[in-house]
Image (cartoon, rainbow, N blue to C red; front, side, top):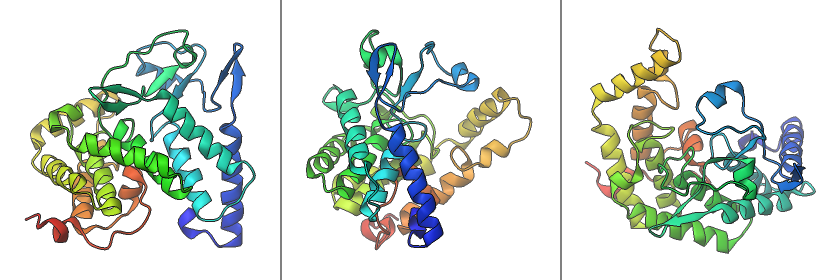
Length: 292
């Protein structure tokens, strides 16, 4: 929708959505504790996949189902001239929340993912362990959004923080990314797309080299193992067909599509999902790196 702003009706819809996000970004009081407005109560379906109870609700720092997506949208809206009251404050508040929650293991930045209200306010301890470096929940996606926000609102400190931390991640050995699938959502190719965007934006060779390595990991992944995993997921959801193998976030088709996008440097809905592109890259990975 932001790509089509300028039309009166579209702009009105965008402003309405921005207002909703701004209101949601205001802190609220629950059980006498001040918490982020992005606190929510998990659905019955979500609870199935949670390893802790969240009777008093939870907070999600991820990009795909948490605060990262709204931060990206608000930041891009600000960059494109929407001057809604409270917009800059909402962006700064979300960035501050991320900076409060970051922790380090072996000098690598991580975030806690989804935590309960009790963990958020410090009544319960969070388990600060390494998380998978996926775009949807992991540090790679979160740092990409912080970088984008820094660029959009001219916050040089946050922008440089994100670049520095992502460079350290790009230098990690591939097994330390804790990824086990080639898929877009929480696998190699989604993370490769984020790092590829960072390469196009910064020109840093560290991002290019890791993009190549992750793209190769996706392209040469054991397909039989992948389909076995996918069949297990499909069965677990009670479905008897293989439609799930071809969906956007976890399907095999999107892996091939994403690899082609990286090689050609063409952002599309995959690029937006994986890391929110600030601009169209001028040349593809194939031209820059003599990939083949």
